[in-house]
Image 1: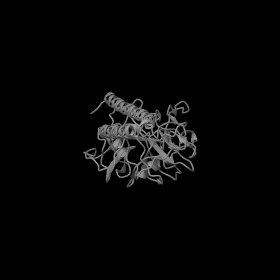
Image 2: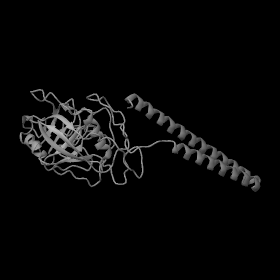
Image 3: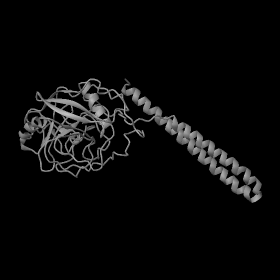
Image 4: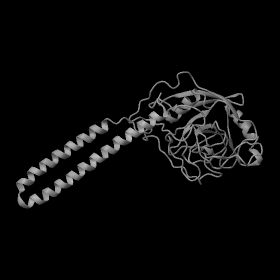
Length: 341
């Protein structure tokens, strides 16, 4: 399993190869410009010489094109990428399967307040997001953590979890691209990933570990990666927490009631297998998935994010999420790390 340093070294080597190719392409363009200048001068003297030089130019251009194509062919690409970002709130490794299964569902269970909240994870709509969630769950990243943020408003009703620090700005030490359809909606029971970035950034392509569960009507832009849906009697557990409201009667902040995840269970072997992708790139193919920018002001009290939580406003010491915060360097959206919104 590659370490963060190995992934950084690999990214550095990739950048160096790209810079070398660009330099070679620039050199080839400069050579062609020189050749064109020579051709223009020689045309005045002899049409025959022009023909000779022209053929030489064509040969040089063809050779340069073939070399560039060969160089590009050597550059590996994968549907998923999990580059290092920030410091992990809990020791964990990024997923190693960069071509995960991209069809079917995986049945998982979030044990919340000692009760089962079944979640059907959909690999079809978010293969990289589901892959990350399964990886984190299998490593115990979510064990013994709290859902640090609850929103209760006309436009946003979500419970946000997934930060072991409980402050709303913690993540897994890596991020990955948004996977969302441009017409995505977030009905009750939706489980989606929070964006990172905070109020001054869109948070796009900054998924991490934080996720949120929609328990009531929520008006959100199509900017959050949906990884699954709560099934069975799972929403009754979430509704019980929501019914107790937010600390100090606020619309957004730490829940009054207990909201502790003791464990997230996933099937054995859930991370195994690879998918079939028509095209591959540094992120999931966008033929069917569109990435929408998050408008921090589009939702009141704010988009779901993983922004840092103000821990000084709660007498009990519990963290009060900023609205609308985002993951960290704020963690993901609940819809954003550091707060929903």
